[in-house]
Length: 282
Image (cartoon, rainbow, N blue to C red):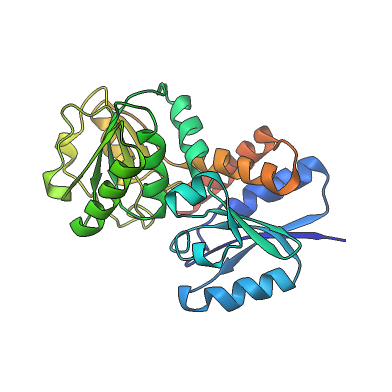
């Protein structure tokens, strides 16, 4: 019997999770299907219930549902409970267990670029579920200083206050985007959806980017304006493909109880991104 998995978000057509997980199932010789589900927030509860009744064993959760899905879980585990955001759902006897694999994903992705875990001075753009997971992971190293820069400053302040309470041995601040300074910062992470569209510009002045700054953009399906500007300014920069890979691999481990086949998953992502760049002339 075919096993069922999927990803839900709104929109979800951009997601490469189906490509990645289909490659993993093929490598593991599993009879399994991973499908995308476009789920507007207003119908999240009934659609999730229908998917469970249909036999879905696990779901990935992407924007804008990572925080909205939390009240629908029967249990929250680990960082999902700590940060109040879920990106992975495991179904056991029709009970929903919420996890968040974004934290391990960002750590492994940054290590690929030469980042060393420890006290960090960082700026995180955004204040949603992804930003919450990234900032919390960075703040776990005592002595870290993390600035939350968001269009809606009040939301950024709420996140900074929560981070300060959750990680009292580190410090969190909130700033308006126009007030962000990067002179003494070693890491900049874009955890917003800005960059998903080809016409998207930059959230910050590119002249603030400096050599030695590590720039990571969670948008993964193109080289964003931020990544391109950062490289021109001499920064080490990457889009979010590696984070997608590592958080997806951890989700797969939770669903199946076995290690994920990283190499075929990475190759599938790289081929898909290459095809997209050819089609769109990027």
